[in-house]
Length: 369
Image (cartoon, rainbow, N blue to C red; front, side, top):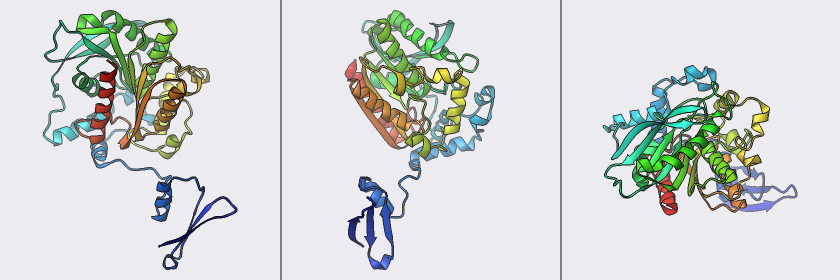
């Protein structure tokens, strides 16, 4: 089939096929990955969006069957009433004859903590059978939702699984939402939660000298900003941070924003909607807490695990952040999970990639504890 490769004066690779195929494929650059060349030969467009794997697609189909409206077309109050990806995962579990409310051997206690402007809800996860005489490591977890939607109930599965897998006390801290409370309200609450955990973890069986941060999406942004602020004010650093498809920059023309502009369950228009509601204007986009990639000093941060979903506008943010952290001397373990979409992390009972991602996070956390 393939008879010759030539490098023309134009700097392009010309792939000439056997005459029976009557076709010549011209590739844009000799530096293109071989996988892209193979795709071109097979008639595939390497720049076209990839599709979710079978497990992920079942969750997306289940979510679609619940008839959610496009978030970016709604008011914040309306958006908060929409079915979530967690609802889609719960439906898949029920279809498999499984209980989506299975506690998985983890006990919970709903509490309040001292937020930056007053008391806020939090949920403590403690593995069953834990001994009060043997303090456990602590994970402070921040949920996603673009700083506008979702809460600790929607994001119950991730902290519950981490408590079980790591054998740790997990505290999932709520924070104030926009647009009622714009930037930096959520960031202020996240840092207040960290201060509170350092002071109060022991009363829940946790070891305040072994505290890690975990956050998903907007929560990943909060986790990173919290670690940076702890460094800057001289508080003990977290021993590790796990950033799951974090919001890390303000450039919405990255490769993944372009390729997955219309992805589900998160798309570019939704991200624009979130930014509009959380920020006060252009000046906030220059703040290093919002634009970690472009503005933050990343030196002196703890070991970092970065988990990205392939089919996600935020994927490039995570990849760029990983490189920026490494350049700053931070030890980083990062991976893009193929066939996975935004929100996959807490779905280990229904998607194989989520199970792998959860195991990766748990192993890294155990290693740092």
